[in-house]
Length: 529
Ligand code: HEM
Image (spheres, protein in one colour):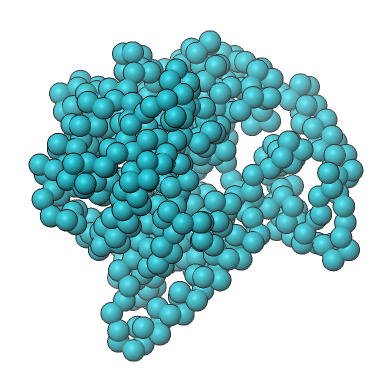
């Protein structure tokens, strides 16, 4: 198969398979030389060293799971970078909380000409501190309450679509429908865009949201792995050579989102100049935060300090504003969609738990449209969501980089090493969760939570770099459950997928992707008949 290079030389229509393969082989030889001949090992740092070839050819998540199960809670690898793989909570408490100032940066960077490269998730050092500081108020309780109208409308529409499935006795393609729901929610809560796509074909917004980051074939995966080892080369090819082929962000998705954001921004400025009411959405919150930050800097009225005590400016450039907005689309799409898919699957599998959720919802939420305060009272529903997130965290692996070497007990983390935090392995550790593969929301009763190390539950990460959208995510998930559970119940039968005894398989592409479609049966509740 031939691939056409876009960007530099695109006009000449270069075909690249041959020279891509050559470049990949040359770089692979270089990396292997670097590893085998000059490679450092972890033994001198008090950590068991294992060969990178034990996971190099596997899905990274499956490979690391196998390694930890076979070798223990902490192992070290050299993949060009020194990697410490761990689920040891004492080490991680230092890395993620106590000694955070030494581990602010993630080790995974993207190289792109898209503003998404400036999204909070990918930023490091002072840039991360500044943008986190500017954007945090946009996710405050007060701000989140403003988007509850959007959540109610989309969740009510989803419930209506599910009722139609029940009336037709059709199976629900839950992955597809949840993808449409979370895409619609993001379009509305973030940009007040009414995509109205649930139950219909994918609209443009959903199509592009699904492919912001490139998914590569085998050859390109190899090349990207090598780029990862040679970050400077990667940046040079993307930034200086404008080689779209190795840009981490898909060019057409980038163009689409930049163009809708630029026109939304123009519309917001026009509304403001006419003295009209602004839209109640996250984009507006970010615009307000940007303007407030610039004013505070001009007047030197901002004396706020960051986690390391220094003064942090509150400025955000135009490109950074676009970057945060694009990141919200990416971060809020697959994560909540896969949580809902798995939650509805577990509820179908455990009818008695589904009934308890239904009873709690009908008891607690009396109005047609729940409020922020209503859903905050849904304790058992939250236990069910937490148990779903424990078993299937959508973002199961995170990283931090050591700015300086640190020693914790017998383990030393050398300068520049990457700590690979195995969130899913922490949450399936029998030390914290006996019989870890069993779905049991009682693990999250107040009493059981009090007995457990709080760091054993980390689907949103932990410490100052924890997910900024966590409360929005819970709100979205709960609004969805309220509307859906009141109207329908999910069931498994001989037609549903996976078949009894069958498994749900997942692959890891930065976030977890559920491989095969889950198909559920759905029945109307008595009150909806
Ligand atoms: C079930 C839903 C979600 C899950 C499980 C999830 C999980 C995570 C995790 C594990 C991290 C990394 C935390 C760390 O490194 O310690 C993260 C970061 C982030 N998430 Fe989420 N997330 C979810 C939904 C959302 C939503 C809805 C948004 C925004 C609207 C969002 C925005 C972000 C951002 C901006 C970051 C980067 C934070 C930083 O680096 O400072 N997430 N998320």
